[in-house]
Image (cartoon, rainbow, N blue to C red; front, side, top):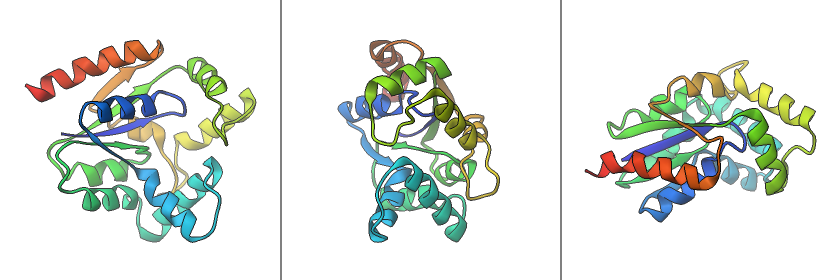
Length: 182
């Protein structure tokens, strides 16, 4: 089974990836291709550069390129979780596999802001206004090379509401895998 993850900043996607890896899944991220691209250009890997690099790759090679690269690279992986799916074209590329399911990890803006403040990652916004502005810029793509989190979330096969703690999220994931393994 292949799972793809979409969701807004600090929604809990990394926790889901970690849990699936603990349960035998390989992990990849659409951002992996962007990171490689940025390293090849001698650029810092930070949120702004990842967004710009993703736009550049999508503009040059099509809106599904990041997922296409992962799909081809990991084609023999029986169980894979792919993080950072941000466009409908990436979902379409991965749906070429009959065992692919898209999961949206959803959490309220206030919960995500609190998580973001406590995790302290480089590149995370330091004030509420910047957090909201960054999020709004990622919701709807201005063109095929931009992020489209709203349209991508609408394609989700499964939605997990993650407004509680990580233990509640892990309980939801236990339920998710139970049918897949039967």
